[in-house]
Length: 226
Image (spheres, helix red, strand yellow):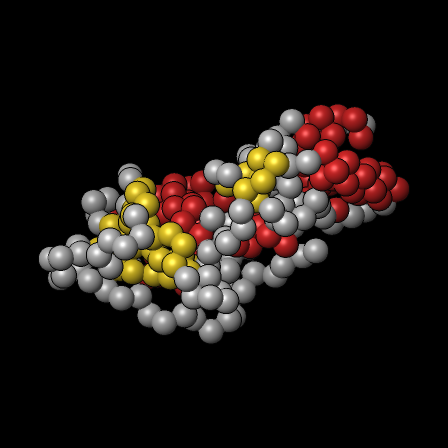
């Protein structure tokens, strides 16, 4: 399954700027989606289904070497702007991986993603590919979510994730990213804090609230002052 970047979606409500608010002292407040799943044991059936999927994809790549070439990921592009990468990571951390819940036992690893990884690492056999990925399968993961969606986030390093995972921006993250590009204070004043509230799409229940800067990330206990 593939998710297209929502670059043209309507933007969420504008950020609540509070630079002059002595009570809060946040540069801005944003809202994010929220992962609502519970953590359970990652059973063997998930691993078997993932291996079967890898086998299918590897055979397809072997028989169709003309598949699309690897595309540079957003996180590679951001490597020249580490502050931006850090702040986007903090935003996603607050959400907890709402977009990961559709990946199942495929981890969104399509032919393009796997072909690029196979070429980069000079992988020549399915067994090599299985060993590479299966060592990252976490013991615990979120129920009905990606096999690699562990308690503390994705267990895969960025360079092993799919292009979907590395390039996708939900509308809320996209809005936050464009805010960073249009304002200098979050990148130049490292003591400035952003506040993010992660809410359920369905019940509107608040799951997490965080405040962060480039150098610090903190989750607030629910029930504290807004």
